[in-house]
Amino acid sequence: MKNMKEEKELIESLKNLDVEAIKNDRENIERLKKAAQDYIDKQDKTIILRISSKDLEKIKKIAAKRGLRYQTFIKSVLHQIIEEESA
Image (cartoon, rainbow, N blue to C red; front, side, top):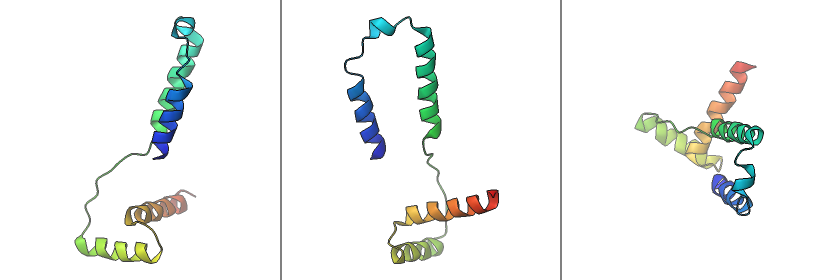
């Protein structure tokens, strides 16, 4: 949902853009291209992960006890391990 809000704000900010005025502005064109690529590079990636039904049920129970959705719980556990290992 955060991305949708950002996209709407971006679209709104571009409504009064004078394309003709910046058409040949190479410096700003390159800056905009870099900004767009940086934005794309920072986006979360979706993965598919196979996990046993028993493990998934255990994960769901632990997540529920912590008041989290199980996907959020998995993501936080992975992040914690990655941070510990990379320190």
